[in-house]
Length: 148
Image (cartoon, rainbow, N blue to C red):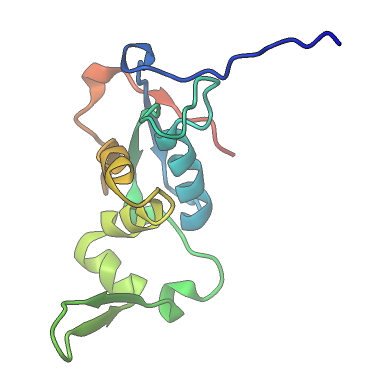
């Protein structure tokens, strides 16, 4: 019986070369955009993906205030927070969050799609979200992210 042995590839820190991508959130649905961003942040789009390593790329999101929800989520959806104290639960609609800090909607959606624990926290730090069309990362020469 002739069997070939294949080795599973495991990335090492010296193998990881993160790229920079920029994505325009204007007229994009929040959840669909967040899943595309989370995939790139984790590195699942690369053949060198290793589950226990941070093999992902940096993502810059511009025009975050122009991202949209489907249906009536803009008014009906509720974001819940709890301070840890009795009676310390707070709810906000996306309208209220958008008027206070529009970047929080995309950040929260992406963060929920990343793993819990140190790997997810380290991965989340590679996400940069801006309300307007400008960002200060021109020196990194970000490429446009291909998401339809």
